[in-house]
Structures are given as structure tokens and as C-alpha cells.
Amino acid sequence: MAVNLEYVVRETVSNLKRNLSMASAALLTVAVSLTLVGGALLVKKGVDRATVQWKGNVELSIFMNAAASQPESEAIDRQLKSMPEVKNYRYVSKPEAFEEFKQIFANEPDVRESLTVEQIPPSYRVVPREAEQTKIVGQRFEDTAGVFRVSYAKEEVDALVSVTNFLQIMLWGIAAVLLTAASLLILNTIRMAIFARRREVAVMKLVGATNWFIRIPFMLEGLLQGLAGATLAFGVVWIGRDLVQARISGARNDIQLFKQFLVTSADVTSTGILLLVVGVVVGTVGSALAVSRFLDV
Amino acid sequence: MIRLRDVNKTYKGNVVALRDVSIDIAKQEFVFVVGPTGSGKSTMIRLLIKEEKPDSGRIWVAGKDIGQLSSWKVPLLRRNIGCVFQDFKLLPSKTAYENVAFALEVIGRPPHVIKQQVPQVLDLVGLTKKRDHFPNEMSGGEQQRVSIARAFVNRPLILLADEPTGNLDPSTSVGIMRLLDRINRTGTTVVMSTHDSSIVDTMRRRVIELDRGVIVRDQARGVYGVNA
Image 1 (cartoon, helix red, strand yellow):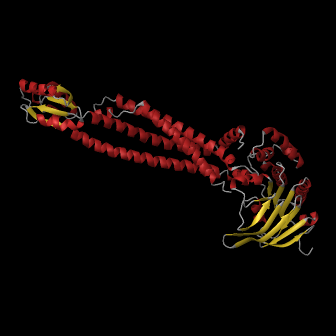
Image 2 (image 1 turned 120 degrees about the vertical axis):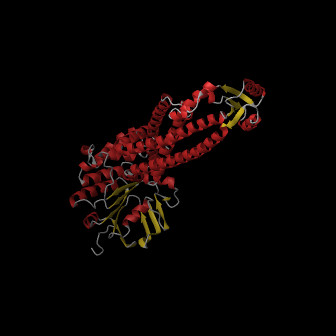
């Protein structure tokens, strides 16, 4: 098939120029749809990462009686040290625990004032080697002298994980729906652009142009529109992520939940590359499909 | 050059376009196809460039059975046939020169051939001075000349003209007919459908008359009306 490059380039450029409004409509459609898809994918990645962190830090807290004696506390310390299932642990003293308590109830002075340092139970925060061992480790301390209560973070994490699992499925669903909508919008826009030029296609067929010869400039045009739209979406997603990230780290919030919601540059880059590939494929294939309708011999 | 054998074509709703049509057209012939609207003239032309397929019967163009032609070879068939229509079918965004050059570009002719052949054929149809005009800046007759130039620039074996003078006044039509006659003299087979009795009567060429899809007359050096 002898397709001369000069013809293809010239034809593509002049078509894009002549159908500027149609071309920009297609481009913007690609950009908007892919921005939404990219945004959904990135939120999903952030949620994934936060979930992994929560899962990795499953801990249990051994709360001592506020009045527990020094030897009772040391006995627990020794026992924790000797247990192979324990990855690491940390003693939270009365003043530290009181600080934590004040932070948690910072907005509720009534609660804050209701307790004194002496009434706060000190505790051991224990991270087991395996999340599954949490219960086994905790049970050993439940009846030990001086222990007030053993509490498992796992229960809360489980609740959190089930919420995030649901959230992830939802985000996948949203991304899939958006992608389908984007593909259809792009296909439709290109089809309209080609419909506006069906005369030209008819004349080309009339004088004996091969189907591939007719298709190639349209496909190249679709490819360029898809690429440009995806690039735009890439940029918007990048800037959007920077803004969100700046908000999260800038705000002096104590909500660990949000700090763990982290989207790395690598995430944005891989999502961006996916967007570019989708843009190019949808643009090219969409044009090929759209023009085929007018090529039936 | 063109041969139809027992060709039948019926459109949806039992509209008969052609019934048992058999025709032989020799090389370098000039043939008028006449008949009222809906008699099957345009269908015949569409069958020859394989824009439509017959329900039955066989068609040969330039020695090839086009029923056997695979669809990717149809463009090659069309390169041997120039087409001219009542509504010109020019691209409004291209100048006269570009419209003609387009026909060569899309079949992959190299630029130096295009630069040489387009001015030649524009000269042949008498439009050298209008080469940079757009279709909407030209008269109907001039536009039809551009369309003939486009059909002929590739030196096809056959030129099909579907009512080429249908939109033109009589004096302009005479010019177009002179042009088609000249192209015929270069060895190109010309098949022209028409309503225009004065043209047919003046030219005195072979006349094939269709009526509701049936050939009712095939006459050498004929005239438009049956009893004339």
C-alpha cells in the first residue's frame, strides 16, 4: 500500500484546522472523561495504601490499672520482652496518655476536665509479628495482676477495612463506568466529525481510494486528539494531586487517617501513562470504527 | 469493455430497478442510456462501479467479472472508471486544481506526476484560468468541467456520466457534450444517462432506452424519441 507520508500529514493537519471546533470538542471530551477516570484511580490507590498501613499496624493495648504498682508493671514488661510473637512494644506513661487523651477530646472541654493525670491508666502498646497473633498475645495478659483491660485495635481496623473494601469496589465501578462513558463520548464525537465529512469520504471512494488510505488520516487525527486530551487530563490529575496533598500535609490535623492517605508521584505517573494509552487507543480505534461505517462497499 | 448478462436488481418494497438486462458495449463506444426517471439508468451506473450488487446476473468490466471481485479490489476497479454526476460531487473546501489533484493523490500517484497531469487536464477542459477558484466561485458548467477533469485525469478506460447536463442550461450543456465527445475520441468508452432529447438527437450515437427496468430499445446512431 503506497501511502505517501506528505499527503497523510498535510491532510491530517488541514482536517484538524478545518474542523477546529469538532476537533476541540473531541479533545475536551477525552480530557474531561480521562481526568475523572484518573482521579478515581488515584483515590483508589490512596485508599489502598492507607488500608495497607492500617493493616500493618494492628496493635493491641494493655491498659494497666491507674493504681497498678511498679513491680506489676515491670512483670508485664519482662513478659513482653520474652515473647517471640511480639515484634515491638512501647510503654505509654500516665503523662503521655493524658496528653493523648487531651488531644482526642480537644474540642470537648467538659470531658477533658473530668480526669486528672493520676486517673489515666498507663498502657503498653504492642505490635505483634503477625496480625493473626494479636488475639493470642492479648489473652495471656487478660488475667495478669495490675491489668485493667486488653483492647484490640484489630476490631476497629476490621471495621475500617470492610468500609475501605467497599469503597475500593465502588471506586473501581466508578472508574469503569467513567471509562465506558468516555469511550462512547469519544466515539460519538469522532463519528459526528466524520459524518460532517462523509462527502469527502464518498468522493475518495469514487475515485478509487483504498479503505486503508481513507482511514489512515482519520485514525491519525483520532490518535492526536486522544493523545492531546489524555495529556491534558494527565496535567490536571497531576496538579489536582499536588493540591490535595498540600492540603493534607499543610493542615495541622491530628487525624492519622488522612496522613496515611498518600498518593506518590509514581502512582500519578503510572496512572498518567495508563490515561495516555487509553486516550490513544480510544482515539485511534474510535476513528477507525467511526469511519468504517462510511466505507461499506 | 462492458458486458451485462441477465442482470436483475430489485430494491426494498419490490421496486424493480433492472429486469433481465443484457448489454454489450465495445471499446471506444459512446452510448446514451435514456428513459424516464426511475427507469433504472442510475442503478445501472451504480452496478458498474460496484456500489450496488445485482440480485442475479453477471457483469464484466474491462474483461473482469466484477461479481468475483473481492472487496479490497473494488478501488482498483474504480480507478479504471471515471464518474461524472449531475450534482458534480466536488469538495467545496478545495480549489479546482486541488479537487482534480485529490483524485490522483488518493490513488497514490507521486507529486511530480500530479504536478504534470493536473494542469494538462485543466487545460483540456478549458479551466486553466480558474484553477485556484473554489467550487462556489464557479458556474455550474465550470464545476461540471472540474468534475470531468477529475474523472478523466487518471486516463480511465471508461467514463460514466449520470445526467451530467441535468443541472445545466442548453448552451452550457453543448460545451459539456463537446468535451465528452473529445474524451471519447481519445479512446475512452463513454456511457452517459440523460433526459436531454436535443443532445441525443444532435449527437446521433448508440441509444439504449430503459423503461421500468427493461430495455425497450437498443439502436445505433439513434435519437431520443422512439418514433423520431
